[in-house]
Length: 288
Image 1 (cartoon, rainbow, N blue to C red):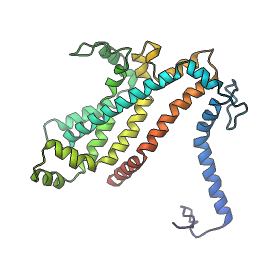
Image 2: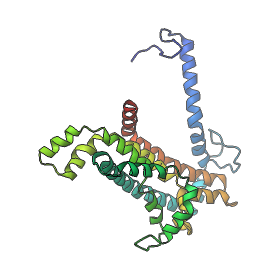
Image 3: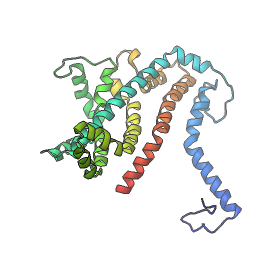
Image 4: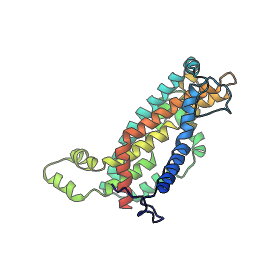
């Protein structure tokens, strides 16, 4: 790795101390801008101050009282609900996405273009427009006649199919050389074998992309739990955060504890999918 600073300003040949100082200062400002609010939330969760206008990067009164109060408010139940919804929902969503994408990308059938347009159209509609029809459908699921309101299943079913994930996987699977598939079929591989052993391993980076975006989409859901959950025991963490903020008896520290618990899984999910995510983004940029 070159020791010279390589920038668009033509400073590659320079190695002066002031260039390094400016670079360090800019990097520190960028880190502070993005990480500062996250650090303030984490510090506030352990700070005894009840003034919401006094968040800082350094605690003035370290205490665990906020965490005890949060546990008494069933924050861990809300966290468990969110983890269950995002865990089951993401697995089903990724499974549906890869299967639908395989059919759209590797199979030729009439109406494939129309199907893609319809999938794209689902991404154009705001959640607010779909809220009332969705509530009606969940109260009486077609064919099965099941009432999924006030249940975690009611939060999982609507997110099983996501247009964005299907389109991303479709575009990646279109790039898989047909020669690989033909060679596998000549060796006697069946349809499932071709899908599982040839196509799917080739598009592994795309799984990281839809995994990160899918986790974020499900984890941040607010309107869907609001429509489904009427009993507080079925609240997810984003919905519980809104409830805690509206409660005058709850201090800012308890809200920050819940915010910390909501923040940590998202960070861990990105770190877990980071390698595949970056490979997928890079592959998509090269193809584009």
